[in-house]
Length: 242
Ligand SMILES: [Zn+2]
Image (cartoon, rainbow, N blue to C red; front, top):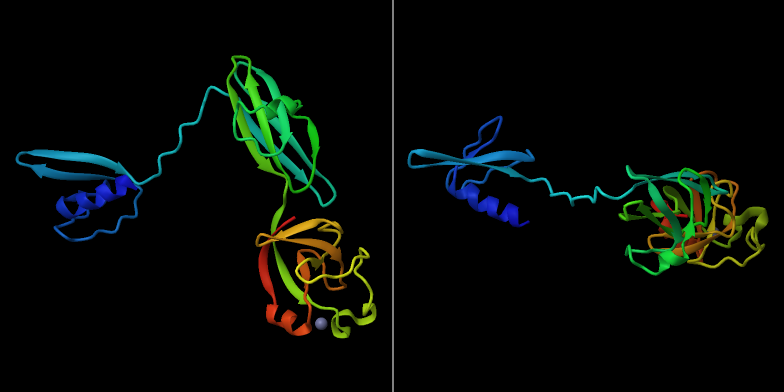
């Protein structure tokens, strides 16, 4: 931000010359800049002063002297598996996987973490944050985190306990046997989301307890207390974490 502020001052007082197509900015004239890098220049007496400016955010310098970690996910509706690859010029001495969020290389949690092998397949628990720790033979450490949750946009419709919504299943409990609860119960395609699984929509926790003849693939039916409130919901396309 500092840089951009400085730049706007430069723009109103100096002459701007783009590398390819010069744009002249006179006093109090604003110039729209789309290029990410360009040159600002002005003449001071006989000498010309140019300076290069980049609008690109400066990337954090990555710690090159630490193992590279790559996570390859193999997620199905039944199992979530990963292969974790760690590479380093000097060789990887320690590779660990921890179920939970670890943000420090020196955390005592790493002592409890499971030792794993690079490239081997591991099964994960659903909807969890995992942390990886890799140390090379020279002692350089890199940590990385990833989530085992799936994210996908679903078509979300509404239903209630009424005869119209339930047809011949009217008056019966949900597929899982639990009583349907508004704000909690979802009907899903069990080939996509397992029955009994927790599902997050817009930060709210639901549970996949029911099914529906029309609820196939990336569709969800959300349970409401009344047909009217269900109608008010209508159809929404929302990101679902499951
Ligand atoms: Zn209804």
